[in-house]
Image (cartoon, rainbow, N blue to C red; front, side, top):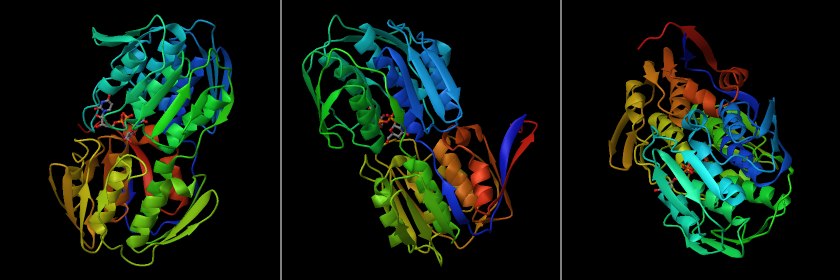
Length: 422
Ligand code: UD1
């Protein structure tokens, strides 16, 4: 049976929503557990498919993994396997983050290439170059990355671009290298800070956490730990955009509002009133949002994962917005689906121009990835009639209890199972 979401637009979202741990953090924290023999426990995990998929990757490396609601317990053997299972890895792009910990622990890692993505190419050249600087050899053989090293030595590494994945892999290899590693132009997303915090709890020595220069003093061994995942800022921001677009009032709990400083400032510019608390914020929108320009960049810039929400907001705003995508070249592909809903949008290279319309109109649309899917649902909340959003398994991979949360805020949305349509 195929599933779709049936969204009937018109409701103003009102109420409060709790956000759990970040998808883009938990998967890396699970990989980091490989760095220490024994039992590591991770709490506040989101109940999304990617967590059991990552558990399978770790099981294929000899770990015993238990997933119990929001808690994942990983028992790592003295000698984990070095070869990740093809089937598990191919279903989960983020599984490539076992590369760094495996080279550090086993001095050898064989990780199948995780494959393409609907948002654009995702090469591993920076991951590999960083591991080579640390003394490993890396090759692509038969569709797998094979990395090995007799020993890892600290090195000075300059990243061409602050890649999240490359920073994480190099960091997780460097914590057990001999000597000091400096990663310059490192990514500084809050999820990297979360990873550094967990590694420090395990005994790693890292300076410059949260900055673009990470200095890692290698240690000879790490201990298992217990760690709580940070709240998912992308999910939190999705609710903030939903509130602004539907002229509602939504309190988002469980996310550090400072991780969304720029995003909330953009919404303020669009006309929203934003009240900030310690671990929560409230977005109130009285009238129609005004058009704002967005430029995606590595953190602390505007997150590329929120670009579909920016397009959705611009589609219903008063005026014309320019959205510039600097991180993933194919991320505008979903704009065609937005146009089915009546968005007046045009893309040229990495720019999109969106002229806001008063009212979107319902249509069947297809989600090409997690965030595009969420953006389409947000647009459906502002369309007349019933919008069907298909391929919702993408949305389920990033948003736990998505439909339930929206219903609790007053949206008219349901999950429908039918025979496949295409
Ligand atoms: C992570 C997030 C993803 C987010 C992205 C950017 C996870 C699981 N995913 O993806 O949701 O959209 O960060 O915030 O955490 N690149 C190279 N060579 C490399 C590595 C990356 O050219 O070796 C390029 C990519 O093609 C892309 C850019 O660098 O254009 C950014 O990618 P990166 O920051 O690495 O994203 P991910 O870690 O894959």
